[in-house]
Amino acid sequence: MSARRAPRRTLAVLAALPLLALAACGYGSQAKDSGEHAVAGAAKVDGLDSVRIGYFGNLTHATALVGRHEGLFQKELGGTRAEYATFNAGPSEIEALNSGSIDIGWIGPSPAVNGYVKARGENLRIVSGSASGGVKLVVDPERITSLKDVEGKRIATPQLGNTQDVAFLNWAKGQGWKVDAESGKGDVSVVRTDNKITPDAYRSGSIDGAWVPEPTASKLVAEGGKVLLDESDLWPDKKFVITNVVVSQRFLKEHPKAVEAVLRGSVEANRWITAHQGRAKAAANAQLEADTGKPLPAAVLDPAWRSLTVTDDPLAATLRTQAGHAVQAGLLQRPDLTGIYDLGPLNKVLKAEGAPAVDDAGLGAE
Image (tube, rainbow, N blue to C red):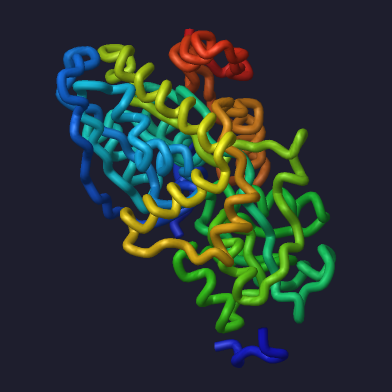
């Protein structure tokens, strides 16, 4: 990085609404639809011609990327065709789930909670975890050299009320700084910036740093930024949910075997990723290229991949904590999340694999 860079060139938040507005990774509303060939001669699961699976074309959805690229979902679905839709935004994926355009999908904790609360608990269930970690505070080392230097600076987060926005507001509050959650003004200026343009904003000097997920964090490092804080260091055992698997309640009720088939593919994908890190990283990047038209360069892919951990465990207690942080920030009235999880199908799959069951932290469906 050169010694000097170029010169620096709302809505009211309603109860239970925009807090958890956008997913932790990726924005927009476009989706790309495609699918695979059903396994010739294999029986259809639950008599279905197809199962429609949604995910984001981002590294934090590595389970879905690898599972699709390696054909693991299609393998488990047999004669039922796996169809896919990729999304750039949490709200658009929730809308697709609500309308029946997709049946099951990978999504961040914020839009999952928002979608559940908006529908008064009648539209979705979280049925599995997928990934933990992968969020960092990256700063301009010429302007910020310590955590206390963040005071008075301009820090980007992806969106008002999204997962990283809430995390940064909560962290800033812990430093004793006052920030108006809606406007982002205060002892620190919170600049809500689309992940796609955050690297450009950093390059131009219009922000001093960003609290962002991967691969945006590693893109900023490639631009000369420095990781000042890894969010995982703020959580017990360094674990917190960044991506979950959700399913429409209607689909879960009517086609439980299909849900179990997709979850078997998810568990197998996570196991394969853990056992074959190099190959899995290449597979995820190949699917990213297919979905977005552009793979991640090694300088971004490698550190981003290292900061993520795939997991079947939804880390339910951390989702409860994240929602509590939003309440404390004034972005959300305390929600009732009872019933947001149904981990029965996942635990059935895990038992068959000889793996321990996972817990819903008291937020399971009866």
